[in-house]
Image (cartoon, rainbow, N blue to C red; front, side, top):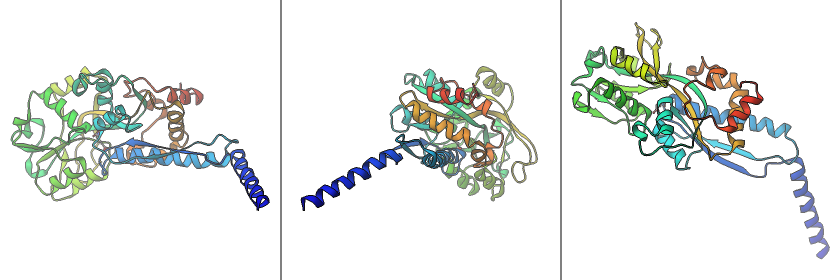
Amino acid sequence: MKKIITSLSSALLIFVASLSFTGVVKSAEFFTIGTGGPTGVYFQTGNAICKMLHKSAISAEHGRKKGTAKAYRCTAPSTGGSNYNIGQIKAGEFQFGVAQSDWQYHAVNGSSKWEGKKFGDLRAVFSVHNEPFQIWARKKAKIKNFAGLEGKVVNIGNPGSGQRGTMEELMKAMGVNNSFFKSTTELTSSEQVKALCDGKIDAFGYSVGFPNGAMEQAATCAAKASPINLTGSQVQGLISGADYYAKAVIPKGTYTNQKKDATTFGVKATVVTSASVSDELVYLVTKAVMENFDDFKKQHPAFGFLEKKNMIKDGLSAPLHPGAIKYYKEAGLM
Ligand code: GLU
């Protein structure tokens, strides 16, 4: 009996030893990337990052050196959007998030909605697609510009979303408050298209990458909606007053029946993290996206114009995380 136990335990020992020598994964660390509504582009962005990471983890497991294994597994749930994500990163609940460049700026500087709640440890990883700020209006409401929203039912977005914050900044620049509209709603990005199609609202404001399926649905449903122009001196004032805004155009033909360019202002979608997230994890996430770049770009049509050299600087006001810098230097991007 003793002999059996001895040989069993030595077999176990040999097995455990061989595990560590062949470098089998010893532990998996789970982390979360905050995104946006399930029909938006952030949700696809977060999930594309996870996909690239898992893909590179699999190839790393094949060619891995002895004993170096630590597996990271990532989830990218749908959330309330930019400011919600930054808040969750600050609270240590999420390790990464997608956030608009304007809200990245305000969070790290403690301005606008982040006044008194400054998140100095916010770190940038890279920027992604452009997000023109869009006001989509149903055809019958005959809204041609911002002034045309007076007395209409308008969705200003759910609290916590980037679109809600940016809509409020636009309203401030235009010198109006909620009483300018007949009424306002706080629907999420995935609820607003149905409400517009059903005629329950006349318009909604949304900062989102293009082209995207939800806006095509707004263009083709009974609302026959289209994005209006947001131009004029107040919008120009917003653009010239801040580096995180830029002029943006949604070219005609992007959506069905969109006969004219829609000219507006916009932000960048960015991927952010915290100084307290490890260099190793940020390095691996950055590397996974950059080294599977063609595949990453195929994950959403809004990624078509991405270029690595712009992604490491455009729209980033928080300092880059050291783990990201390590990769950019190694890859000769910096
Ligand atoms: N920009 C939006 C926000 O911060 C989200 C857009 C998206 O989900 O693609 O709330």
